[in-house]
Image 1 (tube, protein in one colour):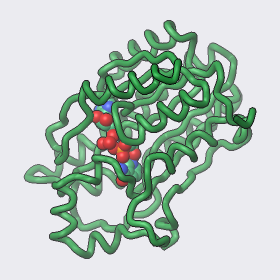
Image 2 (tube, rainbow, N blue to C red; image 1 turned 60 degrees about the horizontal axis):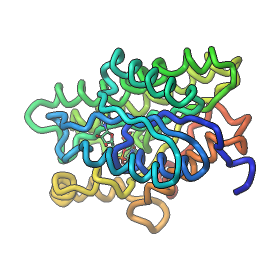
Image 3 (cartoon, helix red, strand yellow; image 1 turned 45 degrees about the horizontal axis):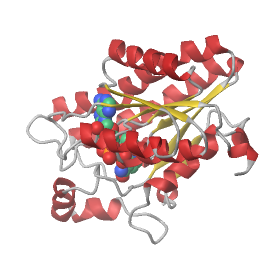
Image 4 (tube, rainbow, N blue to C red; image 1 turned 90 degrees about the vertical axis):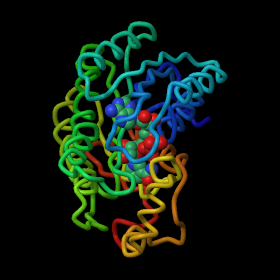
Length: 276
Ligand SMILES: NC(=O)c1ccc[n+]([C@@H]2O[C@H](COP(=O)([O-])OP(=O)(O)OC[C@H]3O[C@@H](n4cnc5c(N)ncnc54)[C@H](O)[C@@H]3O)[C@@H](O)[C@H]2O)c1
């Protein structure tokens, strides 16, 4: 491996690590030499219209990282619960030797529309996708500052954090769009706060990714019933959805020394969606 993308000796906190992009990040970062602190809620949030990650999913991530001869400490924690998250991060950091990388990746989407209570959907989505990211960074950053060895943080936003395309009055989609735009604001203020400590902070903005968040019956039925939404969500390049590894490769670059002076950047991984 190119020396500049080696993560040998680094420890990475990843939220939403049970499956999807979070699992892909965990495996790829472990391949690059990192040990992993993996967090996932592993239970359902009522307003989410598709099955969320499970304990079995998280166990699969753990097994995959261990099979690469890397260490992993996993915890079933809701990123909305600041105290529990801090405890999980402290526990993982003490077992593994600190935290160098944070991937605030956990998130929810409404699935097939927000259902009977759009206000609740809006609140729950903002709480997980925005407040959860704030909690995640605050659970790790003080320790990273104290360690004095720099670091890198990537917050997972979305093309919905750069555009409002597809907006149709649905409270859940509005909560998703608002929270993902909010993550960009957090990234910018965190980048200012942490730059003096050589800790870099960036966002990634994926277009549709082939994970259970969008590859589910509820959303497919919702799209079929709303063809304009499907058209609005299409990419500039001729690809319907990208793969988790496409996002992981961007994340790997952002957290590696190859990007050592890249901070405060909102990086689309979107097949041209944002400029369409
Ligand atoms: N899939 C897409 O099309 C797409 C596109 C752009 C951005 N994103 C974003 O990418 C990130 C990863 O999503 P994914 O595509 O892998 O979806 P996913 O649903 O497969 O994975 C998300 C994981 O986060 C976990 N999670 C959700 N809420 C949590 C909470 N409160 N606390 C802890 N863990 C929680 C889930 O259990 C799940 O395992 C999310 O932030 C999502 O909004 C996804």
